[in-house]
Length: 175
Image 1 (cartoon, rainbow, N blue to C red):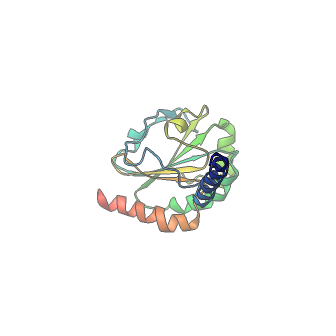
Image 2 (image 1 turned 90 degrees about the vertical axis):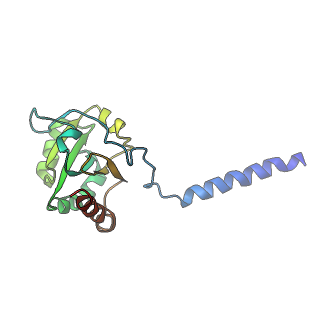
Image 3 (image 1 turned 45 degrees about the vertical axis):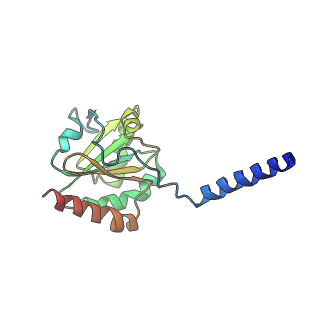
């Protein structure tokens, strides 16, 4: 009887590993969903202005965490630029764990779709928001409640099937 225990443990472990292969790594649960956006006070990437969640009160806003050293952020950037034209959406970029001049240079090179860009060299704001890596994107309603978190680069499909419908819904809900 005891000689079968290692075999049972082996197959149990194999089952857990097989289950893990079926999971989507971009679907990590966030405890922030339906909670108030975590507070921050960060300086603009361009001047001495400071911003926090209260700066965007009354707006549906997108909070995109990016960095100049992030390859996936380059892939995502054209999709973010499409969001730039949406009326009633405030786009906030968080330049995460970067060098100030590198962030500015990156936006000058690829374009700046953001209404506001804040700078977090140490990454403490990213930690408070539960950021695992860049890029990550959050959508907040007009009350400042986190309604959605997207891990990884936003694709055209994500934009059309998830983000745009949610943004329109949030704009209509609290109009």
